[in-house]
Length: 327
Image (cartoon, rainbow, N blue to C red; front, side, top):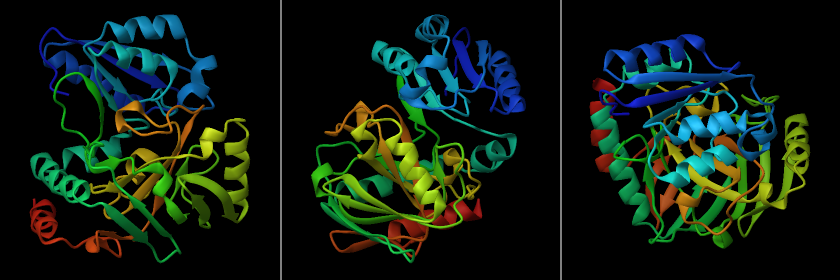
């Protein structure tokens, strides 16, 4: 987060957070001369704006608006909540989403990673995606979906902190395709979260998508539960495809914690529901948000392979991958 002496670092956590991570981060902020402040409260049953009724809104928002750095360790994330919207609109805070981070995850996904090489890998991956107009994704689980990219929209390479704004953990490249061009079948066969009752999936959840909207959900009990959860918000926007991302953190493994799962090497992740304004998309807000993981995909951009069966195959990516795995 490039914390400087004298800066105020606010750390948010709930009862689902790993307290060892919260305490270690506060100590680290103090050691570099910053002023840490930890805000802790009971874990809400929902995320995003659906968490608003459970939050201490006034004190929380006041503290965050006056912070230089905001590190979120909440299990039920504040990302896309009303306080998050208002704080980010101020444009003065460096925020990072590290929701549900555990000590084990921190070691594998941060401590043992050659971050400069990973960021270079992400830069190449973002460039390949930005230059691709028509994309197709398939998977052994039955995913078969196509869409188009808008060259005017951003492709984010996460984790490269540079001034105020919202940041995610490195090991992810994400963007919003042109919504009405997203058609086909998306299959979640890794994990889904939220709802809190899901996580690593026992059976695939199959989504039928037309013009960027989920029009059918099939599978076992997890699929039925997921559909009921989405419908429970009484918000049709919860069925919108908000974004897609690649996972590319060599330390990530499938654990049921979505922060790590969406960074699993060679996986793709689709987000449903609330669409962050930063994606420059057409769908916009929803009452909540959820993410699902698709394993071992094959991704082609304008007919050129980027991922094949869950492995990055483009020559530039393969070169950087060797350095990442070696170091």
